[in-house]
Length: 145
Image (tube, rainbow, N blue to C red; front, side, top):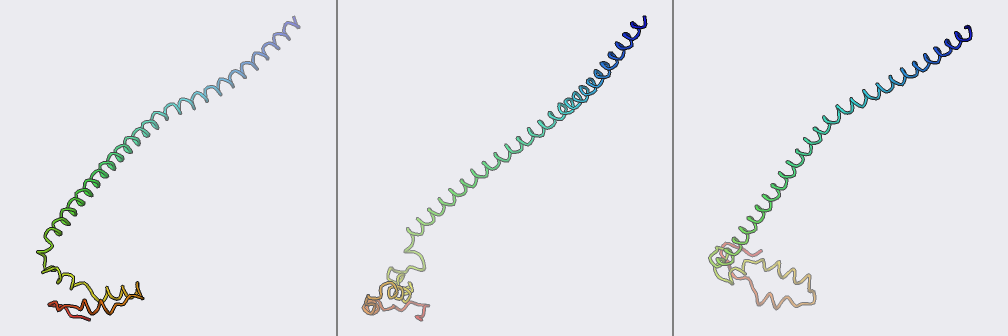
């Protein structure tokens, strides 16, 4: 009977140790489960934030694309107006104040600047012939320096 009692005590100690180990394992499992549940609750919120951020970026991209389209349309409009203005200027150049007749228009070009440029760029060229041939005409309102 004593041997049975010792064996029973030994079995009780073994079962107590197993129970303690099982309780420790259950505690670790419960903590891991709680951490996983916390992560599970956090992920949908983060996914919602990311989805909102993506929507915002899509709106920004669309707005940028619209801005680019508007800028391109504005650039084309300006180019068209510039081309029209250039064509009108060329077509009506003879009616401008700067051009009374063709020779008067070119008389307004700075003759001295042209001759100086020729002297500098072509030092062997005889500029005296040009100076004599293209003497500055008298243009109203302008004085030669």
